[in-house]
Length: 368
Image (tube, rainbow, N blue to C red; front, side, top):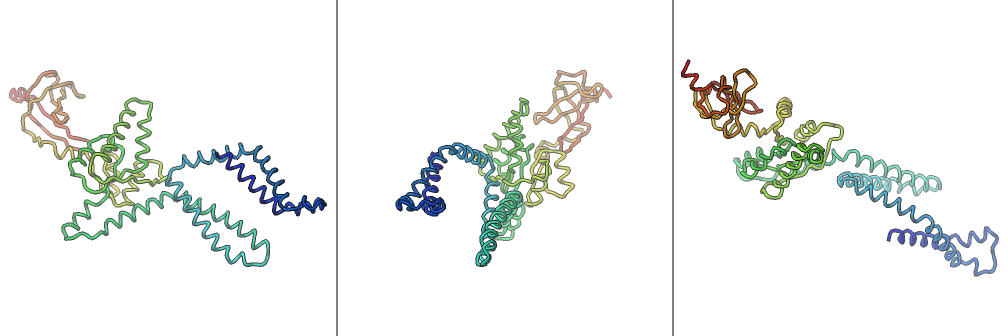
């Protein structure tokens, strides 16, 4: 089909050129008789035949070139193509406005060549500006939309206070998506506001899901399944941030920058990212902190019944676990591996990375 369109275009071009310039070409070649041979219609027919032969010879190359351009445009992300095209249109509009007074100048070079040059240059510059600054434009549009949502009138002072805190977008990082508990938290309604999933986080998840390592591949696919569940099954507002910060190589740094620009809250499980965000004054919601907060409180001196499963790092230590997965280090518990015993809590260590309980066997406490 495309080859036929190219051939028709060449034939029409040949007919037009032959009709317009055929008689002039005949006069240059001193062909003046018979008169019917020098008519514009004969020139149109000859021009159409010549261009039809040319199209037959080079149509395949032109179609191949157009296919190559088409394949390249299909691979370009929609955001890049949109802002590049928008920049091109603005450049051509500016060139048109500048060329209006120039075309009135009587000097042929100025009125014909310069407008063409300005159109090409300004169109190219407009496309480059729109394409290279697409991340900033996308971020600006996203922030303006968020600002409009914040300015929506809310009745009552209490509602205003609630909106100011809960309407902040919650930006998910890769670790919290792979963890999977974020979906359950959204399901219960404890996490309010819009859930924002950056495009560069999706790219990292896809890269992990395509990994040759089986463990990484399963983690990445689990993260993608969690996102599908959040978007399709859970009644929360989900937005995809299409922008990117190409000048920033690391995903964690991009997340910090996006959270700063959008005035949102970063949701993560990454201990180091949590610390860096706290240092820069960025609000963070750590799922591990939430999990630790809702765990049953265990105080020193309390007694528990646990099963010692394995030995610990230090000499004579045994390791046990609570039902919620909290690790208990049992001093002098190595001799009780495989047994269910009573222990007395001696101390509790709580951090963002988790909680660790230290205990001693009750039988040894009584012996002392």
